[in-house]
Amino acid sequence: MRALRIPMSLFLLLFATACVTINVYFPAEAAEKAADRIIMDVYGSPPPQAPQQPPAGPQSQIEAPGFPYRAVAVVLDWLVPPAHAEADLSVNTPAIRQLTASMEARHRTLAPYYASGAVGMTHDGQIEVRDQKLVPLAERNSIRSLVSEENRDRSALYAEIARANNHPEWESEIRSTFARRWVDNARAGWWYMDSAGAWKQK
Image 1 (cartoon, rainbow, N blue to C red):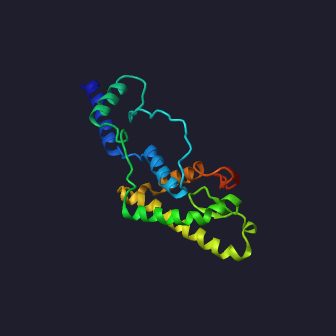
Image 2 (cartoon, one colour):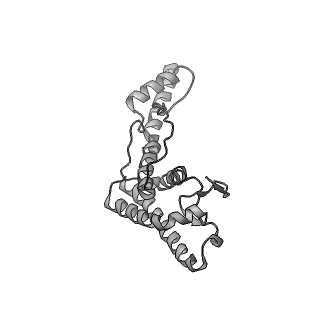
Image 3 (cartoon, rainbow, N blue to C red):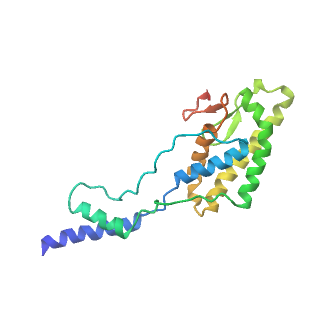
């Protein structure tokens, strides 16, 4: 009887753990597509084509080499299918549309400063004045205000997307996704900050 109780106890423990730890995974691929749509609305041109990679298949919560672990993993995958198999991200709310429109209108003024190198994109999904010497003295207060307004709207956008999808805890991941996609969709010659804080030209 003792030999039978140990595998059953292990099975029940693993099953209970899997039920507790199953989460709704952040939909990274859907977030990139949503970010691209919004960013290209702001930039006003189609995004550059990138090679498509096939999505990874669902993975078991348990990866163990031998029996009975493989059998337990198969049963768990059947009883508790992975939550991240299919996911989407909604970005079509009045607040998101309003923020996007505001950023789109502002971009027409900011674009020459990106092109000159006066303004660059930071690694946290915002922008900053990179070199104020490239801005005429009479325009410096104006560009600082534009940068502040843009950063306010960007932060509000990331929070609103997370809130609109009922996952406010996704805000930091949405911000990180946008930070990458702002740079990936930017024009050649624009400046951006890498993860170490160094400025680079695209």
